[in-house]
Length: 397
Image 1 (cartoon, helix red, strand yellow):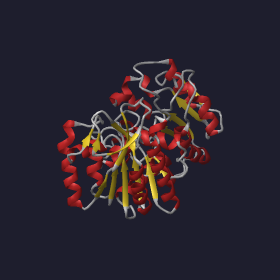
Image 2 (spheres, helix red, strand yellow):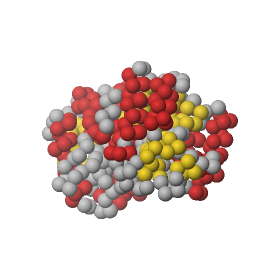
Image 3 (cartoon, rainbow, N blue to C red):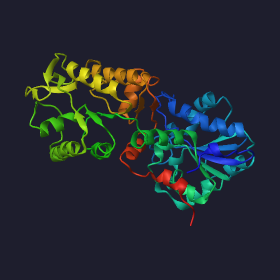
Image 4 (cartoon, helix red, strand yellow):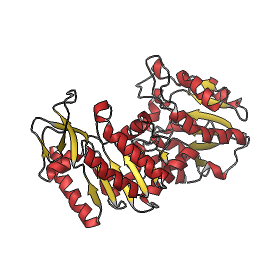
C-alpha cells in the first residue's frame, strides 16, 4: 500500500474517496464536522501539490435520491474547513459532470453527489466503478470508515488504477494506530471493552487475548460473564445464548495468561428511569434491580490498571452514559485514560459509543487518537483484512 506522502500530484487529476457521512439536524445543518476536518490533511496536501481534485462520499443510507441527503447540503461546511470554493456535480452520470472535470484546474476541487444515490455503489458494480475511475489518473482512498465494505468507490474502483492508487493521510493514521495496538504495543497492553452486548464483541475479545495483558470488561456485556460464573445479576441485561461462549473466553484468558477484570460493584436501580439508586455487588444484585453503571470500588480498581498500562484501546462505555445518573463510570474511565496518556501511554479510542462519550465529556483532545472508523476499526481489531485496504495493494489482472 503506497501513501500519498510518497508522490507529488502536480497537474494530475485525482479522485479521492473521503468520508463525509456526517450527522445532520432537522434543518440539514451539520452537527459534527469532525469527519470533514479529518479529511483536510489529505486534501490540503493535494491542493499544495497542485492537483485537480475530485471528492466522492456517501451520506446516510438513502434508497434512491433523497434531497435531505444530498451532499450539496454540506458544501458550505466543507468550504469552511478547506478554506476555498468547491464546485459541485449534481449528477455523477450526467455529461455536464464530465465537462466540469475536464475543465477542473490545478488546486480546484469538485465534490460529486452522494454515491449512494446510485445503485451501483453499494452493489460494487463494475460499470459504475469504471465510470468513477474514468474521471481521474490517480485514485486515493482516505475513507477508512467505509473500507470494510466492498463498494464501488472503496474497493472495485481500485482495480482500474493498477500502480496509480494510494492511501490518504487519514487512512494511513487509522491503519498505523491499529497496528500500534495489535503489533507494536508497548507492554502492558490494556483493552477496555464496554457496551450492552457481548455477542458483538466476542471476535474482538478473542483477537485481543492474543496481544493484551489486561482486559477490562464493563457495561451490560459484563453481566453475561458474571452470570456464567454463577453470580446473581437481578434483572440486568445478559445474553443467555452466550453464557457458554463467555465460559470459554474465561478459560482461554487463563490459558493465555491474560487478566480479565470485571466490575466488583455496580450502580443499581429498579429501572432506567428510577432515581432511587444503590450500590450493589455485581454478583449479588437483588431480583428486582438491575445494574446500569460501574460502582466506586470498580472504578478505583480500573483506575490503577489504566495508570499502569503503556498501550490502551478503549471501545465502549462502562455504563448507560446517556443518562447523567449513570455516566460517572464512563467519565471516570475517560479521566483515567486521559491521565495515563499524559503520563506517556498510547491510547486509541474507537467504535461508536466510546467516541460519542469522548466527545460528550471532552476527552477527545486528551487521548492519543480517536478513530473515525467505527465498524471498520472493529473489524481490523478482529484481525480481518478490509476489502478497501486490500484493494490498494492488489495489481490488476
